[in-house]
Amino acid sequence: MRLDLYTTEGFQRGRPAWLEAIWLLVQPLLISSPLPGSRLRVLLLRLFGARIGRGVTIKPGVMVKFPWRLEIGDYSWIGEHVWLDNLADIRIGKHCCLSQGVYLCTGSHDWSKSSFNLMTKPIVLEDQVWLAARSIVGPGVTVGSGAVLSLGSIASRDLLAWKIYQGSPAIAVKPRQYMHHAAREAHYGELADEVSRTAADGLGRTN
Image (cartoon, rainbow, N blue to C red; front, side):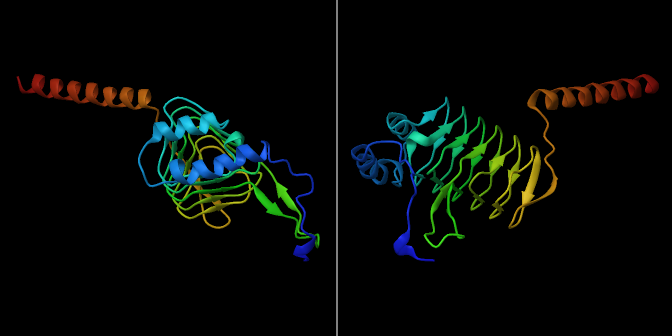
């Protein structure tokens, strides 16, 4: 390849250069800093164009390439040192958890051309996804609802809903069995009723 011929070939950064320059100053001071303050991070990201829902938690050390290409749904958690490298759009659904050091990469290069052209594709995380610490999601990947990407695993292709993935490249290892809170309460209630009936029957026979 010839890196002196490198080109972004029509790539649009999405905002004026002056606004991006301000973001480059604000991010290390107030977003990626080790200081606490999730509400301030959410506020600043919104001011720079991010679409962020209610109850979102953003921990220290987070890096965002372009906040105007970021969407985060209600009650999602973005952990320490998560890197949202969003040259293209990143959409994170509701109730998602991105653990420490997760990397979402929307950019790559065309290795078939000597000019090594930039290529970008969006990433979508549907609702209730968990990306465990140090896991990586590549360009163009959609992670289905409820899917889990295990510690240090790499997703280079779409992940199906409600499955647990592991490895590099990540493969499905088992389904994610999930019991809704209401269903769990009902289940425990049935168990309690059964125990009560059994105890009552035992007392009746004793008498």
